[in-house]
Structures are given as structure tokens and as C-alpha cells.
Length: 97
Image 1 (tube, one colour):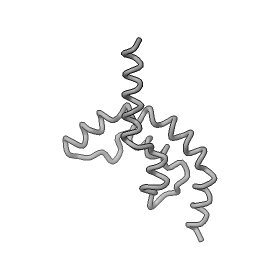
Image 2 (cartoon, helix red, strand yellow):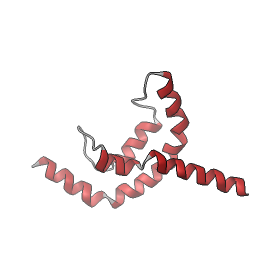
Image 3 (cartoon, one colour):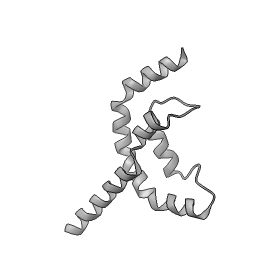
Image 4 (cartoon, helix red, strand yellow):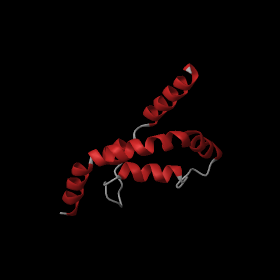
């Protein structure tokens, strides 16, 4: 039993180390051509689908190693994006003006 807890803790720690996609997509690297609404969820989907993956061998291997972290982060990003929805809608409305 303790090994399962250690693996879960390791995966959650990896998720925190990789950075929450919602925070990254809303505040750190907002999308230039798209809305900030559910940006973290869209970033996770892109990462899970291996879109925009680096062509060099190191980038592809690193992306595949982090793939479980993206899968774990997806429901967390959906929840965080839902909580951030009023802010992202207001930010998207201000960008149009």
C-alpha cells in the first residue's frame, strides 16, 4: 500500500513541478490568437494529443515522459478554468475593446 501512495505523491509532485496549465495559459503565456477561456484545458488537450511536439529526439522523449502528468492535470485544469471563468470572460471582453 505505501508504494501506491508514493507513486501518487510523485505524480502529483510532477504535476506541480510541470506547472498548472490553467495558470500557465491564463496568466503566464496567454494565447495570442485565441481566447483565454479554458486556456489550461486547451493546453492540456494539445499536450496530450502531442500537438506542437518538438521534432528533436530529446523534446519528443521528454514530452512522452510527461504525458501522464498532462493526463492528471486535465481534470484539475478543467476545475481551475471553471473557477477562473469570470476573470477570463472579463479579460476577453476587455481585449475586444
